[in-house]
Amino acid sequence: MISISEIQKVFRGTITLNVPLARYTTFRIGGEADYFVEPVDADDVVSIVKYANSKGIPFYVMGNGSNILISDEGIKGIVINLEAAFNYLKQEGGSIISGAGVKMAKFVDFCIQKGYAGVEMIAGIPATIGGALVMNAGCYGGETADHVTEVTVVKNEKIQKLKKEDCGFKYRSSNLKGTVVMEARFDLPKGIPEELNKRRKESILNRNESQPVEVPNAGCVFKNPKDNKAAILIDKCGLKGVKYGGAMVSTKHANFIVNYDNATANDVVELVKIIKRTVKEKTGIDLEMEVKLIGFEEVTL
Image 1 (cartoon, rainbow, N blue to C red):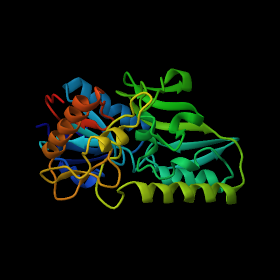
Image 2: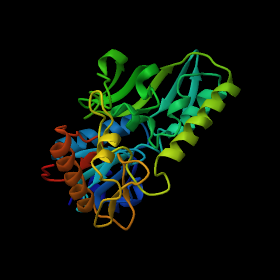
Image 3: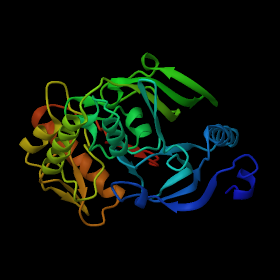
């Protein structure tokens, strides 16, 4: 393992070795990260990316830790966390500028306070702006990328500003994977704060009533197939409440797997296999995962 002192020759931020990652994920599952780094600014991000590439060390960016499942063996490489240095919001002309480390709820509240509409329905998404952009997170008819006009990233070891059309936003995906998203510009329509706040509260209430927010989970496990809902398919196959180890298909929302009893990553993977196999056998539909697997050497689902 490379020493902290060697990394500090090129990196000004904080470096911690062997950090348990379960506490950084909404699933509360996952092993340790070899290196957990917190850059101080954009140049620091470039430095750690260059260093990782020069040493052949894989790196991963972690935001709020939702929509991911980290292996029980952890991450053999560098985990980059941007919350410390990229947790800022500002109004610039008619645009809202958000750092990648800003949590979605904080972003939506800021937009509403400034009288901007179009994001109130995604207030309950448990993600940072950076992670939400990479996967184009969305709910209730809205997506993170709806009002994005520019995204600042580290790509090919350089800071680049990408226009929306260069980001490849699609349903729950983008071509931002492999970059480090640091900042985004949003151009939003104007609205009345009182009305926007009411819609935000309704969205969060609906989420709390329909999803198992009280139990650790990673969000929707599967993407919705064309002309279908993954939750409906899983429910019709009688899989609600099915368990494997400490993992269980939520009885509240069938497209959620919950960590109800100290589940391991392997418990979740085995339950995913049961769900995929059963749905395929009974409906002919092959469900595609929305939750990303990180740190697994080889998994056949």
